[in-house]
Image (cartoon, rainbow, N blue to C red):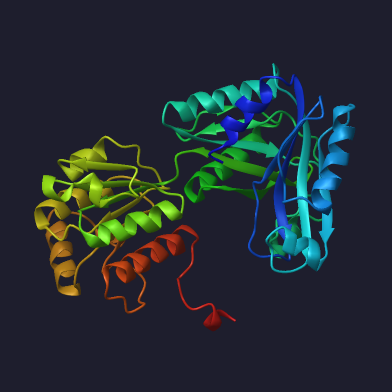
Length: 377
């Protein structure tokens, strides 16, 4: 979603009203393309595309014309044949759902929500914009869709903005529903990106479109070197905000980490103390140095990081664990540390080891064990 505010700046300067069409779900297709946007102004101007042309954009433009004439928000469902699916970059036929909503770009609840979201992001923070979907939205997950089917349609109110610090702006008009949306928004911050979640509402299940904005989830890599450089590359590709920290200046060379967003030299534990670390954060120790690893583990285990991993042999890991247990750290707390680190793929090179770490981070984030897809059939 990094281009959202740039799109709004370019488009909204000359358009008092516009339709925003957002691809919110794909079904029966892979890979998924949720989050693609098209803006349609009252002047007829168009910016962006839900697909890359073809039947879906044609349907969207027709729905946009209706919305600009006064229609309310609409969830447009379009079935795709193989040819249309291939035009979208998808591998097979299926269907897509597009949220079509007319917006006042100058004032009102939507403008207020966007301004708040932009202020948060420009200050270096993260936030989620949540929009209740009209009707019976699909998610692409048949198990979730069983919960949505037959639900009473919900009339969307203005968008809700949920900051990473828990602050909530906007309301659906139902306090319990607002609380459930806020909970799912924090889950979305952990995952990053965008998607549909289903929550209980006053009249049944409610589908909510959640978009995370701002920097990605934090990946703090403690220690420089080849593994750190490769892990920074994978982390950036996965949408994480990558910070490499090393107390040794010669290892904290920004030129060695072109994919890192930040490279810091100094106390790693001290640097972590200056960061906002929540359940979306991943902390990876590859320094292989007791004087760095122990203070960092103490700091990391005292916080909420969703993933903590440490490079090292089983013997070294056992020794570190014993030291912390002597300090009074409980076994349950120490079990949060993934060590030895990474999935067991037999990696030996720096890139292979980094790949196993990145894969484990994704697996933990998604609540999966990280086994073979074939064995899960």
